[in-house]
Structures are given as structure tokens and as C-alpha cells.
Image (cartoon, rainbow, N blue to C red; front, side, top):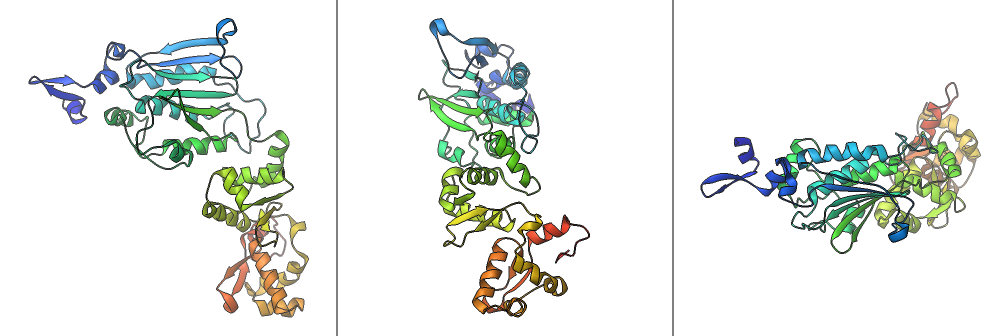
Length: 380
């Protein structure tokens, strides 16, 4: 009794302790007595569209009804048999061979139970499964300050419409009150090579989260991306490389912003990281265009001029503009341009500014040394 009081699940009424609505929904033996639509309805539609009348295409339909404290686990057990195994996807992106990452669809259901608007009594939580997607539909609009735009940007926001229910579900291990669920759904879908989750409002009063089971990449692109499996790249960076691969091997910051849904600063940071890891480089055209390069550790990609300075770099561990000029017998401006290109490509790392700059072995060169045992590579 004290625990219920401490959790706010009991309230004083006419001098006696009485359960709150949250307590009745969470632990009541017959929660439907207190709310007509507090369960979860599951519908499996055949095909990719919802049809009606003579063409009604429902192959399976059932309702999961239980106190909220037990409803989530029962829903998991009931829906799991309908999650099919993948047949043709590549290990580069998939940690499990299911058409939806387990965490993604289960977290969507947890959020629906925890955050739906229980003041709407004529609508319930619905899980619709089509051949190409799963839709989790929850009555009510997102509570302020949460917006569809904020969710799409993966912002870590947390606002409980039903704080008592959230508190109990957190205590039961279903949730963490840190706003981490939605961003992690994005991460899990990216890791599985799938499209990111989509959010929208259906019918003006139902919040809908859609998970698509179709992979972003075709088989040829997945095989090409296998070349980058040893490089630590984010899902967004892989998507950009795949886009560039399909468009002549080039991309721009503007294209990165549009495809990933980020601003110029986010794109700049991600592109610099691609350059640092040696999988992209500037074309020299005002740094507006970037070219996808072969992954780190491909010997044919070492520039011929760079091979000539490697003995010096191996011996001294760093190199300056004047060293390059002496070794290659080139002018200061030419040496500056070469050092800048090698730095952008990850062969070197710049230390210092202006005339005091020196260059040490970069990540690309260190990676090559690591994967070429027995070879004399600077920085090995």
C-alpha cells in the first residue's frame, strides 16, 4: 500500500485510499471495465495497401487485452510470430535476419502504450502489418514540446503525457526516462540497412510510426559497400557513399544536407570525417564537390609523389613544407598544395598553423601500415 502511495497510484477520496485511473489500467484485473479501448489491436493485411468490401485483404486479426503492466509482453509474444526472416540481405548491415530490428518494433509498441492519450476512449492502439511496412498507431497527438520535426531530427526529448504509467513501466524495465527510445530506433534501422522510421498524424488525432522492411540498397550497392566494412562509418555516411556511387562517384555538401536531413554544419562535420578516414576527398573545385575514394589500405591509391617522401617521414616522423620542396624539387606553393591534398585524404595529419605547420602520419597511412605487415610504411 505504501508503495502504491509513493508511486502516486492511490489518492484520498472521502477519507479513504482509492486507486487512480493509472492504477486501474496498470494492475486492474479487468482493465476494459475502466477503459473500453486500452488493449492493442493487430491486423495483418495481405499486400501493400488496405482494401475493403469485396476486396478486403485481412489475413489475420486479433486483440491483446491485459493490464498495462502485462500488456506489452503479451503483445510482443503475440506479434513476434508475424515478423518474418529476411532472405537476401548482407551481413555488413544486419545483426539479425529479421525483417524489422527487434528493438525498433518493440520500442514503438512500448511508446504507444506509455504515451497514448487515454482520454480518447473511442480509439485504441493498433498495429497494422503490410508486406512492406509496419504501422504502429496510437491515439492522441505528441505532447508539447515534442513535434514531428523534432522526432525526425532524432532530438532527445522526453515529455510524459502519462507520468504515472511511465514511472511504472520504467520500474518494470520497459522504458528509460531519458528520451533515448526514438533516437535508438533510428540507429537500429540504419544498422539493419533499412529506411529511417517515419512519423505522421493519421486522421487528425492518431500518431503513427511507420517502419519499412525494404532495404535502402540493392544487392550490387551492398556488395560495393562491403569494401568499407573495416571503416567506422555511420548509417548516414554509408547512405551518402551509396548515393555518390550511383551518381558518378561524386557528391556535394548540399546533397548531403538534403539526403540526410541535416544542416550545413552537420554535413561539414560528417564530410570532414569521411575525408579524415580516407574514403572521400575534395576535387579541388572550390571544395564544393567531393569524390568517393577506395577504402583505407589500398596500395595503388598512394600518390606517386607521396611515395617519394615516405622514407623521410618514416625516419623523422614529421615533415614540413621545406622538406617536401627539397625532396621533390618543387616550389613552395606546389608543396603547400600537395601537403593540403595529402592531409585532406588522410595520408597526413596537420599540426600547427601557417608557416609553422608540420605534418605527421595520418589515419589513412596508419591504417595501411596496420594492414600491411612486413612493409616499410611511415608511422608503422
